[in-house]
Image (tube, rainbow, N blue to C red; front, side, top):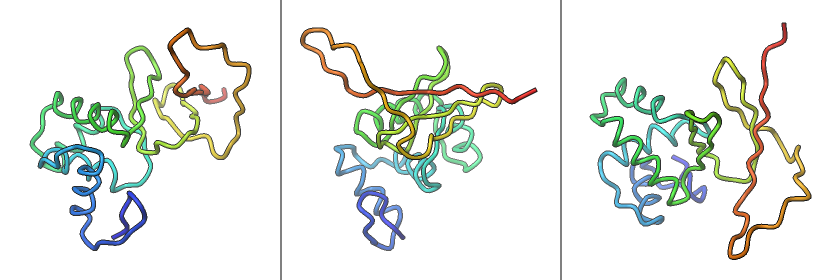
Length: 146
């Protein structure tokens, strides 16, 4: 199995995930490994806590919604996920942590990566004293025609 951290092959995807968690300073608990497997085994994707909770329930992973939220935030703080606030009440977690931007399909509540370096952001304001710009997230909202 391909190791999602460095492209190395170990042969055991759960071992690779446990190592990935250890490398970022997280203890590989059963719940973190189970949720990490659900998150990362399907490639780059965008999920909400509720979506991951539903997947965990279907996979018979015994976790609460609060545990899912806590794990997503721990993974984000460790650099494994990227958090995107799309609407005031809707937060997505992106398994692709590289610098990139997104389309959001209104009505479908679907978030998609914008392919390639298609957006250039310039003329940013200066950050207030003692602060620096960490990143810029561009979300282009789409709706179906007609």
